[in-house]
Image (tube, rainbow, N blue to C red; front, side, top):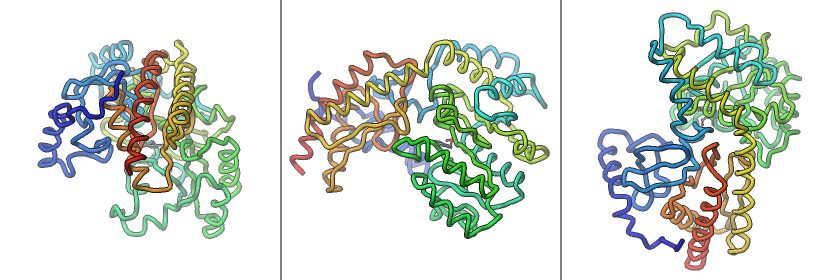
Length: 416
Ligand SMILES: Cc1ncc(COP(=O)(O)O)c(C=O)c1O
């Protein structure tokens, strides 16, 4: 491998760039936030055509080992044959039927024994729906209105920045605490005695990963009569032995899961203790497409393959190798960067650290342009994901590319 940073980017990503220009005329901003350029539209790919396993091809025909996997929607890799087959077979009898289908019951029955404390469940299509429903269930169960959060739980009004024109007064209802400092919950409960229904927390918000923090957040929450919700939309199914909650011996009151569960099919669930979930009885949180049996068939097959093939320990091992390799390379090449699990090894990330913001930005830009030119899709602002489809050779190749990219980043450091 040689450094390719002097490639002709305009040629390499021409079709991507053209699509971006078209999109800007018909889609506000050219796309959603999750479709933002990796670095910029001139020097990094923006549109992708197809994917298989852990490989993805952009619209210009460039191939990549993909560590984004549609923001973690895949744990088995793209287009997994058994999962696709299960979904297709189910769809042949109609994906969505009037009223109920046996799959709905089977789906929830399959999930319950896999998540700690889960005695009842409800199904949805996206993580945002699941977290929103979990809070609503908790509000009804406790008879209280306010909730406490920190970090990202979806795009709905209650968890986007205030300046995004959320309805007036909503920020009074949705309070924020600091995940890494459980004691920050106490003054919030003190200000609103008997008013807070739930605290919701996603495992990747606690960095570095410390099990005691989750136990403490849960303890404080319950001591004030509120429900503790673990948002495992990213970590559920993916993290050995099936959730971060199970890994750290924590039984949340409610738990949300999506992403890895569906292998790209739209499926999500809220699971939890019977006493709280019963509050969902008679509550309106249904959507026309919630009962998609093909997505549930895909999820059931995903669970089976993940468990039979030891996928969770595979992604852990690969993540550890990638993290250790990146840290060795950064040290050997003299680049101020640090790799770590966000929160754990199957979800790695690399942080460049420099006191000068401009230098830091230049290093990030140089590194990601180069790895992408080397055929490795790593995201500069979002954690990465390993899958069953990644091999040890893929990770070795990724580390080779990362070494070259670190050298380019180091140059950027010099020329700053
Ligand atoms: C922790 C967490 N909760 C909720 C969501 C929202 O899920 P979705 O994008 O499927 O609506 C996400 C999405 O990234 C997430 O990471």
